[in-house]
Amino acid sequence: MVTAFQNAQVVLLAAVLLAACLAKLAVREPAAAGRTTHVHGVPLRVTALRRRRGAAVGVAVAEGLLGLALLVTSHLSVRVATAAAFAVATWAVSEMRTHRPDAGCGCFGGLSDKRVGRRSVARAMLFTGAAIAALSAPLAGMDVLRAGTAQVGLVVTVELGLFAALSPELGTLVRRLFGRQGGRPRVPCARRRSTLGETYATLHDSDVWAAYENLVMSAVPLDVWREGCWRFLVYPARFGEREVEIVFAVSTAERDRVVRSAVLEREGTAGAGLSRGL
Image (cartoon, rainbow, N blue to C red; front, side, top):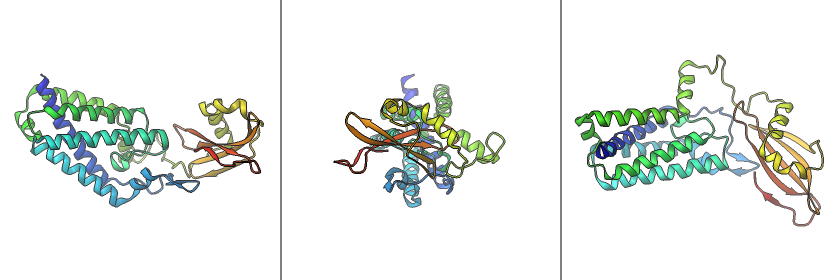
């Protein structure tokens, strides 16, 4: 049973890599997705790289070659390269969830347009575990398919069901096929109408606001403006003897809105500068 499980991982990983390759080549992310590669002039390098078509094609080709290699050879170097690739992908997805929560991971091209959540991170971790389990698999993927054992088929079926449950791309694929989401067209967050009341409600319900609420000196913000998928609110605050300004960035997305913050020294005070970045 252990050998059957290991062989099943080879087939699973080859299928995933080939699917990711085809998705990246065939499904581009919509140009009007409403996400920017800069916030206040700071480039978001992971997202910017993903948006370069040449880089996306390069990653897709590498994934496709790795998937084919898993099918035709059982050489250890191919297995190690696969495990390393999924480990790097897990790190990248985790970083995006922390530092760029409004962007999709691009794991399956334009289908991966939803913000990176726990499901995407868990999926990447499980793929990495599968790649580690496949290191000792005795057969190449094609040999496993030719053998066609019931045990391998059962393991692959169960794992595909698990990974499908962890994949938001399936919902995106259905929307693209039928052209609608919940009976109406999808509106990019940059063009979506977001009221100020909605922004206040999102802000006041967030953990970020709770962390600074007792430091804020006014219920009315000093300034409010919107840029793309974010609305920014500036509040005066006091840290001990220091007067500062707290900038809250509130997502204007329809779902899964997030709130981020930055603390700035007020103009005219010594040592003005950014103490916490958005």
